[in-house]
Amino acid sequence: MKAAVIVFPGSNCDRDLAVAIREVSGRDPTMVWHGDSELPARLDLIAIPGGFSYGDYLRAGAMAARSRVMRAVVEAAGKGVPVLGVCNGFQVLTEAGLLPGALMRNAGLSFVCRTVGLRVENSQSIFTNSFAAGSDIVLPVAHHDGNYQADAATLERIEGEGRVALRYTGEVNGSANAIAGLLNDSGNVLGMMPHPERALEPAHGNCDGRRLFEGLLEAVA
Amino acid sequence: MKARVFVTLKPGVLDPQGRAIHHALEGLGFDGIEGVRAGKLIELELAEGTSDGDIEAMCRKLLANTVIENFTIERVAPRPGSGQA
Image (tube, each protein chain N blue to C red):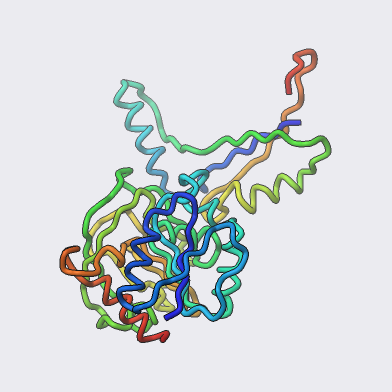
């Protein structure tokens, strides 16, 4: 799997994501700096990491979404290259217009940092094909702005199209319809607040995150 | 010239920060508060001749997320004699 991890000033999960990709695929991803205008050719995956890009100035993900490299990411996504955004990466994807809606301050106002239960609502996507539909998994979350909101028509559309890939099984951050992971309309872009790269081996508590990367590898390689 | 951009959450969008401010004000003993919405004020120092269309484009492309936020633009006229914009 030929992968790239995008690195913004303030990203802090870029190396964890790179380790996860290397562990599962046996190949180091290319780390691409936000000021670069080109991505490596023929990528199988573009990963946008968690963190606090640009210090969350203005809105979480707002500045990163307008960075030079994101023009190349948007173009690649349009051509069908798989794009995975985790946590701040999800916020960047909504700000860049690759996913609908917005991620707002958690309803309880607190930073939430714990392991949460998730239901795999869509197991047909390239990101979730290693899970059974409707199965429950657990992954860590760590965010302050994970409260997914969209207008009623958008929520109805994404639910109807089966684009909610992951849903919280309990209250976490106030997200509309408890949405934790969302696909774009062609299914090659996934934004998710939970961190699969932090659940890679037994020492992490569980390996549900590894299964996501394994399924992705199988789908794209 | 100077312009002020006010970015506010759209009506109906839940504002947890506004709600927390509301509760804090009530905790300080202020009665009669019927609602609080928090927003942002962005002050722009602009070259003379910057058009309304340019400022609106800045709002749409970056300053506001129009999925959840509205914006209003106010041009600030220099006060005569103050020497300040």
